[in-house]
Image (cartoon, rainbow, N blue to C red; front, side):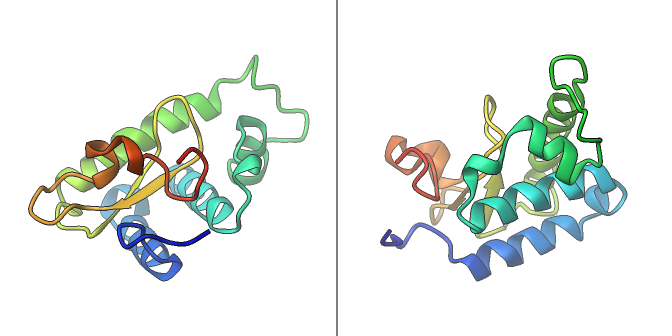
Length: 138
């Protein structure tokens, strides 16, 4: 796939991830750190099909292979916490970040987009055509 100018490079995404994970909120939460790192790395590796509740629970959150997403809401709970933590990060320490990493509601696959110059909002929030970074639903 050809990468458009508004899509970040792998290096830019990893640098943004490192800055997020180095923030106070993420340094003190190993669960959020593991969850975010897992979904970013799975997407970068071209494996968005691996980004499922069961896989996140087992590979990122340390649940056993007998994990049942129907009876254990850990992934949904942590996803909601992760979304709130990312919102706080971008409202505070990450307010000038050139690359935004977002976990959209209804999905565990993460999305990145550059901020539009002068708008302060991630471009995927302002454009129907720039919804998903890795070609998942463009």
